Image 1 (cartoon, helix red, strand yellow):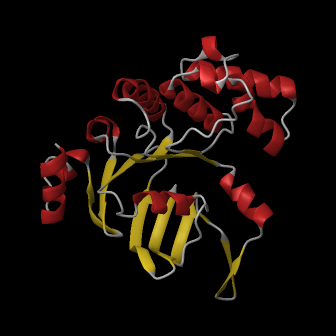
Image 2 (cartoon, one colour):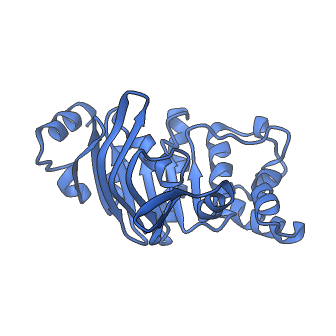
Length: 250
């Protein structure tokens, strides 16, 4: 589903990603762990073209993202073509980014109606289904200010799911939540994983990685230091940098 080949990313003189290779199969859950500033969030932002890579190739479902190769030369896609590629990828951020003047239901309906031109009745049916999926049927008519942080994040997940994505990206989805609200969001993510959704999750929740991940990737300083099953990377890491990290967080 996702293949990164030699991906580099510069922000000016800052070299954030340094030749990252990553392969995530369809239906797989990949959890990316590592210290702050290691390039984790930048990597997943590059997958759906929120950041443009500086070198290398990024493929989603076999399609080269953001670029077209013609005669051995790469050409940047236009905004409409990039939007088409991005439509099959859902993303959930640290901050919920809900529209404060819209109810939970209206927030979830908005993208299908505006981006995919889904009729209102169909968009409402899908939105109610997705709110039920994240356990918020009884909050459909509530505004974001009337919801807890955990509930707002679950609305954000429902909003992403309403676009029927083939791939879900999560960028530290619980980092802005109070500790007692983390579990409800992770529970929804566990159910998504169990349903077969392809997921790439940047998180500090090592317990979630151990329970749910098919593949754990440990990054530091813009490179993949170690990858493998949770049992190998978390419980029996081979690299000293990985061992040092888990010695501090476990």
